[in-house]
Length: 101
Image 1 (cartoon, one colour):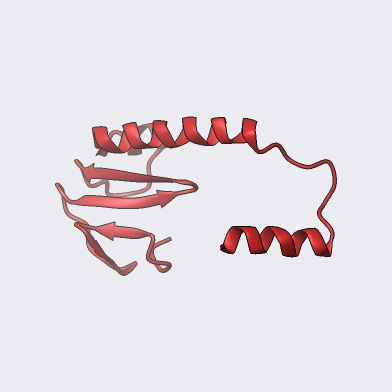
Image 2 (cartoon, rainbow, N blue to C red):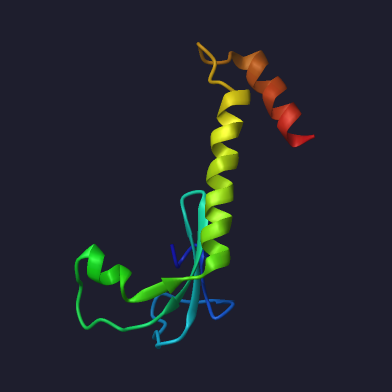
């Protein structure tokens, strides 16, 4: 994730070897969503997920944005159902033309 530029540390891209400090703001992409968290505690070693979640605090705007995106994805699936079969070559070209324009 970090090597692909998906993680921002205090508003800037960072390298995997970046030292993290308490109070830093980290913005990262997880699947279709983006999380913006503030680091509260640094852990010495790898811990369980429950303990790790207590080490950071996600911002309210980030939570609201993720919920809105989830609702939008859910609503979008109603209007764009999956086709029964795969598109052939001509249909794929038409889809690509439609998406690129």
